Image (cartoon, rainbow, N blue to C red; front, side, top):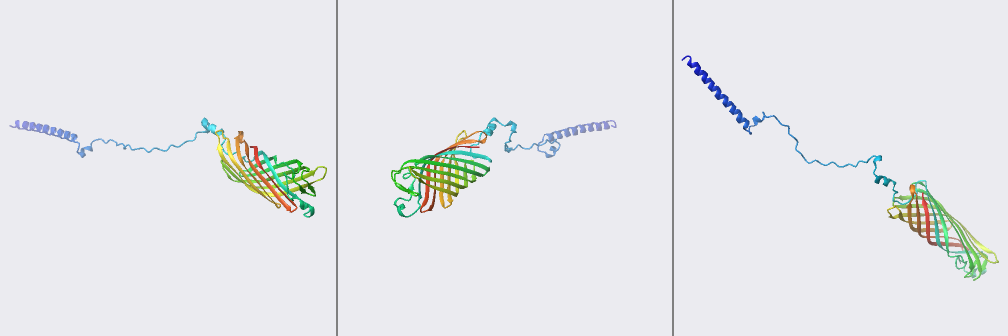
Length: 334
């Protein structure tokens, strides 16, 4: 009994050890298979979580100017292409033009030495065309030069010489100076005038498509009207004027061709005053400009011009002249 009892105890201990060992392994297996036990999740290695993919906001595309050395052919061509703007002279640049006015010359004058006696037998105002035989149509030239010394300031000079001669018989009797001229009498007449203007032009509006200028000029007129009768003496009327003129000039772009030729409308209006005289110089026309190299351009222009000057010294001495008609003009801007 003594030997059997320890053996029995040993066998019992072995059985108990086997039972408890199997039970512990089963418990661990069940806990590992269970997915709802938060305590076991602590034993599982943590996996780093990734951020959820969201909609990416596009960034604005910024245009980067390429270096000068990598310009495209179109860009290089655009640099060399002249701008389609009104042809206006640059600073320290010139504008020169010549004009031919197909004028209808009209006028009347009074030149009497006395208001008494036989001088009243004729009309005191003598017509240039019907009485004196001066041609009523002539071609008169004008030359103009303009220098731009500031972006909006220019100096302008214009000269218009006129000389119209007439030979023929008087259609009406008239008195001029100290002589009386009968109807049908052979006469030789001449009307000479030198018309000059010089002044400043300021452009308050100067854009690529329009220009508005205000000018102020000094006007000088030297004029002589002479009448001669064959075999007899004659008479002459001398008229010298020193006047001021103010006015406005406008140029507006109308059309541009693909070669940058421009068609524009140009209008000028000036009023002269002073020296007990009155005058005006008005013109309007279309201007077609063609760009040349190095910022230069040439142009042709056609339109209508009207100018008149009148001075009355007294009842015995007066002159009133006018010229109007179409004109053509050609010039250069450089």
